[in-house]
Image 1 (cartoon, rainbow, N blue to C red):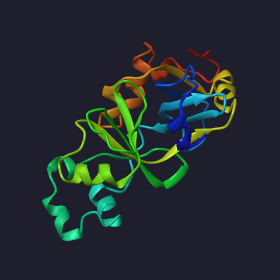
Image 2: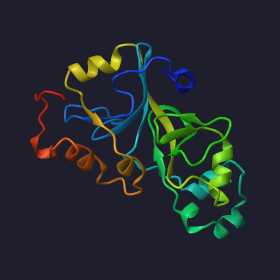
Image 3: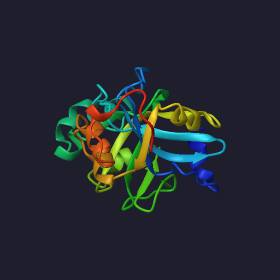
Length: 201
């Protein structure tokens, strides 16, 4: 499932708006110790974003690359823009940027993901953030995670993931290092309690 699925969300899956938390048995380098926010889940598949993997690129780097701001001018960006979080969203379309953000910002291409969170994948929102007109809470993600029909359900039943309700504070926290433990804590679980043979929620 790709980003286009979000534009036509007539079917709502039980994982919409949930966190997926990787179990210790997940050895794939893209997903080991990852927390994924699921934006769309249906019979056609699922898509979401890894929210606890930092990108090497900075937000000023992204603005320069896209020629939104010329290099000499990045020094004059607001502190919020200079340190705006840029995350690795997943292994699909890693050259494409997506902004998860609070619903106080909207443009023609913004897609509601939940009652409080929207997704925008156009340059408009990057310009707005650079100019201090962006949403109150947001993060830029490069790439996304996608699953085909039935694939994610199979991974969960094979003890690959735990799932629980998401929390906006964790999604938008710029400090990514503690997100795995914080997401587990939502379920009353610590990493030490997990094993590759435990059940799933």
